[in-house]
Structures are given as structure tokens and as C-alpha cells.
Length: 548
Ligand SMILES: [Ca+2]
Image 1 (cartoon, rainbow, N blue to C red):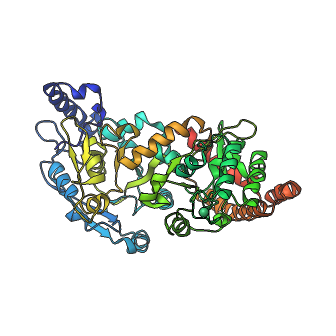
Image 2 (cartoon, rainbow, N blue to C red):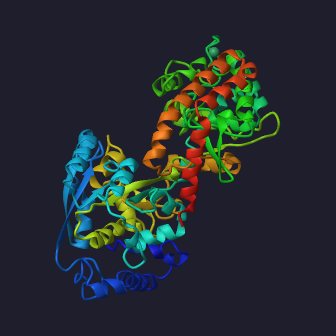
Image 3 (tube, rainbow, N blue to C red):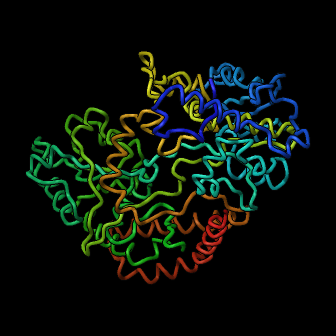
């Protein structure tokens, strides 16, 4: 199996003649594996390893790297994973694993850094995190990696970063160095974790349509409340439920009907400028409007306090369906799989003055986690290590790193999923075969072409494209790397500010009074140094965008 070839992926010609394809593969592999001029002249730290045919891997002589990782709770030992057995065969690089159990991960990782007893590299997103990478990178325990990310040494990752400069920004530390390599599972789904659902059976029964405006939404919920749509003779209907101040199950996107969406951190980017939603007039209008929904029992009173377990119990429990609508990642998350058939998605609603905006979630970086792999200062073969890890950013190895042997390649080149054995599921099985949270690159265009779409993902994708994507003009602050000083300001200011906002807004939603109290609320935010917080975000964002 050849792990290379990301840079010649997916062209329509791939589906053409097999002979041409094979020839191209051979050619590209040879080219991409040729040592650069500097390596040849210096002999390179890993010199003399190129095989006679010009390929770098498999190495002529076996090398061993010491890697530290943390296991996922569903994983077993890394050395037993079929993925790494295949990897060793392909590269002739043996990995000596220190794979820490999930429960011990944090403590053991801290010990490793504190004792300076370092492996050659850290592997996977469970072992690594942004704060550690920035801290230990600046202290020299992790080495800068950017000089290795070139076409000759890392053709797969290089190609991904060339096509996606935003991913390069995400993995670049505040000091301009790259200390960690990404794990990429770029799905449209991340842009709208929240999806809004409504009970279609009830709508049909009452002769109503899926609401398109906030006024229609109000009228629908009013009928849900008063007309006994579940037909049990009791006024037990909960017209609409959710978890306030939650980015998957909350109503932040609904605020968009007033011109700007909201989210738990309230920090948005508009034309390159940081905008704090909860101190803007649009936020005030939204709170004012939805207060009526609480006052008339259309929004679940418990939405301000309940947790996910309570929400699910409400949606899936009891003899009769009582929930008229909700926010969730997938339709079945609240009512369960069977009852989910009652519900359909609600599009972005148009507000009283014609505004129609949905939130675009950027805080999750579209599924890019910047900390998938890092090399330490004790590593004597950084170049070999980088070449080794680059293999897993290629098409085939990406799929295998994600799903192990639970995929099979069809004649068209697309991977399809295998049926998990009775009583198990895909993740449970594949986590024993492959690392999952590891260096790999599933780009948005890979879903449906390189790997078949999962049915749930496909449905959510369709919902987002049709109902939300055209209105995603409120973009949240992205998940960027902050400096230690920035983190200090953010953690000291933001928690207090957001707690104050949550408490005040909850009061307004239940009791009203926002008009009278708005000015003193703004004054209090000022006193809590909201301006300083915004400034920190702006500075960090400018630095982030300056990465070329
Ligand atoms: Ca009823």
C-alpha cells in the first residue's frame, strides 16, 4: 500500500485508465520522495536511507522512534492497532509506544514535561493541547517544524496547507513558529452545530406550515400550546425547548432574525473587526422579542436552567409526545431515533424588520484541531519523523488513520464503511484498529468522494446547505492560539463578564425590564473592562490573519 499521493488526488482523471493512473502514481511518488539539494549536500540527518529506486520509504535499515500518545477511552494499546502494523511495513520505521491510558493522560503528560524526560514526538490530540504546545514550544522542548513542511519532504501536508492557508494560520503559534501538526476533519457540519427542529405531525394536524418568520414561529408555538396537538386532552405540550447559552442546543442563531446571531462567548468578526454581540442593539431587540415567548409559555421556562439529560428526557420520555420543537445537532438527539421522524428542520427565520441571519460557527475551526503531532528537542531524526508523519496525510492513510479496517475501497476509489459486528458500532471497533484523533487530513471535498458520507452527516449537511448556509453572515471568532498573556486577560475577564450577561439576560427573558436597565447594563460591562477584552481579541485576530 502506498500512502503518498495527496497532491494527485481526486482529479476526474483518477477514474480513467488504470494504466495511466499507475504510471502517474509511480512518477509522483518518485518525484515527491527525492531528497532536496540541501539534504543531499549535507547528507541530511537521515542521509543514506533512500532506497536505490529513489523512494524514501521503506527505509533500507529499520529505524525506531519513541512516541508518546494518550489512548481514547475506546482504544486499546497502540502497538496492537492494525493501522500501525501497516504503517511499519510501509515505512520500516518501528514505533516504541508510550501510550498512556485516558484517565492518566493529563497527569502523566505533566510529569513528562516537568521531568524533561521526553520521547521523540507526541502523537494525537488527546496527548497534546494548544496551551502546552505554545508553552513548551517557546521553551524549546518542542521544536519548530515549519522548515520541514516543503514539497520535497512533506508533499501531502504541504499540498493541504497550500490549498488551505487558513489551516496554516490555525497551526501557527503566536511567535510565528509551527510547533504542532493538525488533525483535519473539515466538515460543513461544524459551521452550524445547532439545527432547529419542529414537530411536523403537529403542524399538519393543525393545518400549519413550517414557520419562515419569527411572527409565524410565534403563531405556530401559540397553537401548539393551546390546541392540544398530541390529542390527549391535556395541556401538556411544551411548544419549544432548548438549553439557553449553549452553542449546539441553544437559540443563539435565532437572535440572527434581529440582525446578528449570538453565542456563548459573544465574540464575532465582522469585516475584520471584533464585535461583541451582547452589548449591541440587535441583542437587546432579540431579548425583548423573546421575552414574550417566555411570558406566554411558548419557550420552556426550564430552558434557562436545564442540562442535556433533562432535555433528552423531555423529548424522548413519557407516553405521549409533548415537545413541539427544539435545537440539537441531529434530529434524534432530543426525541430519540423513533420519535425523530415527527420532526423537520426549520430554516433561518426572518425577523420583524426583514433581517435573516444565521450563526456561522468558526470557533471550532471547521473541525481542524491544531495539535495532532509535535516533535521534541531530543529527537535525533526530525526529518525522518516528519517524512514518516506526512504519510498519514495522504488519501489512503488518512482514511485508515480515521477508521482502521472498518472501511473498504471500492473500484471507483471511494471508501465505504463496513458493517460493525452485532452489538457494536463503527467507532467502538475502529478505535481498536486505528488512532482516530491523529494526524490525518479529511477535507470537506473528501466527504462523498474519498469516503462515503455517513447518513446522519449527509442529512445534516443537506439541512445546513438549504436552510442556513445562505444566511451565515454572523461569523464567530475562530479557534486561534492566544499568547499566555492574552489567555490571562481572557480567563480573568471573560468568565465574569459572561456570567453577568447570562444572569442579566435570563432575568430579562423571564421578567422583562431590558429597556429600563439597558444603559446601566452597558455601564457595568464597561466597568468589567469589556473594552480590554475586545482589544485582546482584536490584537490576536490581527496577528492570526497576518500569517502568510
Ligand atoms: Ca396535550
